[in-house]
Image 1: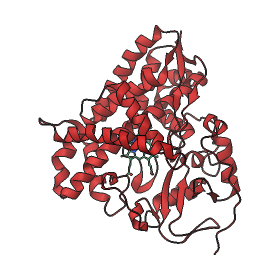
Image 2 (image 1 turned 90 degrees about the vertical axis):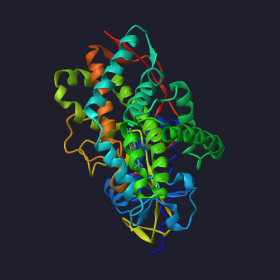
Image 3 (image 1 turned 60 degrees about the horizontal axis):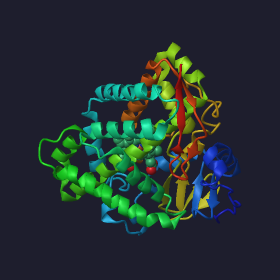
Image 4 (image 1 turned 60 degrees about the vertical axis):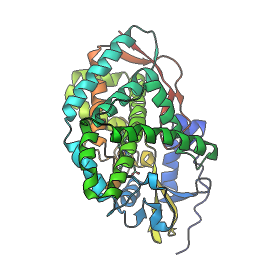
Length: 393
Ligand code: HEM
């Protein structure tokens, strides 16, 4: 079958209107065709829930590892995120086992206390910068706590992480690639120091360090690279998720009111907030063979971009998808991905977001916008550059 000329997509992930509200244009793409070719991004955009799940689930037909299609990958990039089965299995299972060993309820409680401490100080301010004053420090402390490491100073680290995050859009803006490479070097040095330090390692990395070499030196290297993804990817995604969640709570004050009356809703509500406005907009795979998506032919080697944000608002998968339904059930959203590359940090992220909302509920105050918010100009991650908020009696 020949590739269908599906017409030019009008999707510009960095346009002001898309950054402000991506959902209308994603709905148009979803209605247009199962796969829409994007000239600028040189990829097929997949927006329908069922197609997105199929691509994410079928790692045989849709490769994450570019080496399967003959492209080179720098050795340092080979982590759980890039390797496909069967090579991915030992490193993914090493981290999964390490995660299962962690006391996540205790981590949730420490995070609640940390967030509560910050919120007490912020109550005295007429307005504060939610990303700097709450999202970044809470995300960094909780990831470091999970990994069992001493984190770098938050302001310094936030800059390194932001540079790496922006360079994920290097395909759209090549100027971002070199600063991204330098920031990645800084990240590598930080994480390498956690693997070479003497003393009894604790937390998730303690478990990983103790067992990383069991599967051979190649897998030990994959473990270090994966620790980098856990730390930087986990931090940046969690920071973005906290910002998006705070923004919704500030603009929909009735949500905290409902949750005060029905605290049992909290875990489902937190999950629904990730479906409704999650941080990760999409991910890419490569077609490992000629394949059709719906009635669209996709050639072997073509880049396929799964837009989680579009799938999560698909009316064929969710009733009233554009409404925040705090007790939505079932809620099989793809905000944490799906399949062999699904988020390793899901359980931890859910607990940290829950801890944050618990701390907000404890303040007995309302959260409100305190000035115009500004989205960060990034396509892959939906996050804020500035989010002024206030706590009101
Ligand atoms: C609300 C916060 C978070 C969201 C919405 C989120 C979302 C995602 C998504 C959508 C993917 C799949 C990407 C793909 O298919 O290509 C993913 C992968 C991943 N996430 Fe998260 N994430 C979050 C927090 C975290 C945290 C806190 C950690 C670490 C502690 C983490 C670690 C990872 C790792 C290691 C992967 C790669 C897994 C693999 O490829 O096998 N994430 N995440």
